[in-house]
Length: 466
Image (cartoon, rainbow, N blue to C red):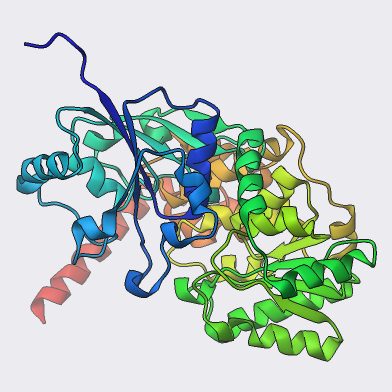
């Protein structure tokens, strides 16, 4: 019998180039211990992955790939199933693990898993397939500041050692997985900037985008950069509403004096998604250049040095402000918040953060006077808000944070913060602001509770008699 300890193989799961860049930065700064082998497992989670470029097709991937010993395609592993929809049956897990160990050459190696979006497949499926593996989670943008989307199986949750995240809101700690006591660890800004600079140096910008930057430079400042998010695909806006949002970005940039504008559409958005913005730019006498393609917006931050970055609630807004110190502005966040359903929608925290921290594009004085949050300041401003909104989203997951939510809501509900919660939700959770103060005794009234139970019994009896 061998007395040597087993080799360790680290498997990193990634579905976006942004995620691979985060992993590369973590590896560069020594966030992971040495391992005999490092595998990058790529997953294309697009609705139709067969016609959508995957991570390995993205410009700049070749530079990031050098951090890993091998790249494996998860879509090919589980074909013909979609990676977001497939999970192993419990009885099949031993067979699957044996098969993957054989096909991937893992032998008897100890497996460490590093995954994103732990609440859903393919991350959950991978954790199930290697039940003895330790698990680490890295953050997928601003959503990690919010709560775990639903109660996680303790057999997975108790295996998670830490949450790695970028410090996009300086000093703010993620709520993700705090119900399991999982500590959060920041990936240093400098390490991530270095990786992004590597991507930017390797990227070839379209000639028209380079020309736009040169024209803007002649005026003494860079162009305004507009970020598209393809919100209609998420059912957050209709196609027409999203096009109007893009047009509003153009109007807002024009009102601030920008005459050279670059629009960065979401990589999966159709070509027609910027038609309305182009028409608005032409009507205003603004030159609009479209930077289409699958590359990261962060590449444009370094290459164009935009004078202003505008978006709805893209993670790229906080990256621009925190990592590059660029002026930023938001638009449309209040409208999207007002119609966001269901209430626990995981976009609620990103929306609240962008809305609370960044200036409104329509407020010229606020945009011109805004400065990026310094170390700790951004997190201090919104920590209470995030806890309160996170608790209202997932009260069962964050049940230990109820008192914190109550204190914040009791002290800070005003005309501005009401947009982040709804009275109906506060009422259902018996939180401050849910009902008028003079009726605050009602939820604890035994007479009222008995009356409600009587009405419910009568309704059930009538329903059975029909």
